[in-house]
Length: 391
Image (cartoon, rainbow, N blue to C red; front, side, top):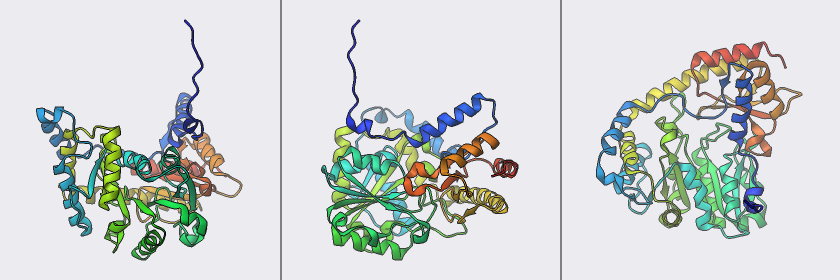
């Protein structure tokens, strides 16, 4: 048998190792050594999907109508449920037929969006540290990534005034994320207004990632970007059922916003995928109609976990801002450590998996991220282990 060499495309050769795959490899090595691992790394909810949502899937999966190809844009009934949820949740009105599109998880939509609007050489503005898919999606579309550093002195929000004039002129799309992963910071109405002004001035499409809008504390509900006057004129908002309803494995999300942006994303999807399984969309309808009793319970649980971890980390003298949203804590590493070395120290000495901040982008150097996706008792145990590691 003869073989010939295979060379991957340049876009693949340029990719950094996917952050969470590298973390999982580190974890597996520790498990192989016999370590009892407390995983505070990847933000994957540890509780099951609520039973009424599962029951809706069980019923829907037997319906032969759902056994054929779905629409790539999603069932109109699911998109109507999304529009109803936005109206009830945020007082935002959206046309289900033209201003909502169903996604196979919000990651898919984020990954596809630049392909609809970016030509080679166009600038894409991305927050850094940030979700790694933003720059990867921009690069796959041939875009030029310009990082907007999230720095403590700027409240971990992009400094729009620091974007060079020539970059702003070439920019065509901006990714923005509030509540933010990994920093947990939430933007307010005044900041959203500045983003809208910037977008109008430079004709930039805003792609706002709101995956964590329903995980918040102390009753301080984060805004939807689309609540702001003029937001529907400049962009779209991505959302996911993953964190809101413990449905990460179901891969169901949506985008809402300006209709020609939704249309462009939908056109990409119609050529590249066949839509999400309709029975899962039926389950999504049940989730969105379930009311606040599900999400209120999840928020109460995460707040208890947050308070447990925050109190312990404060006693240890670690520096961080108490998160008001998301299930992450963004922690400055102690003096003498880098993000990677402190991550390795906690794994080696305490069996605790965390995420190095520089894995989200160079401005994340000097930080680690801890996730609240394990029990309160395990979080307390993590703190106890850390008290004995020394640093």
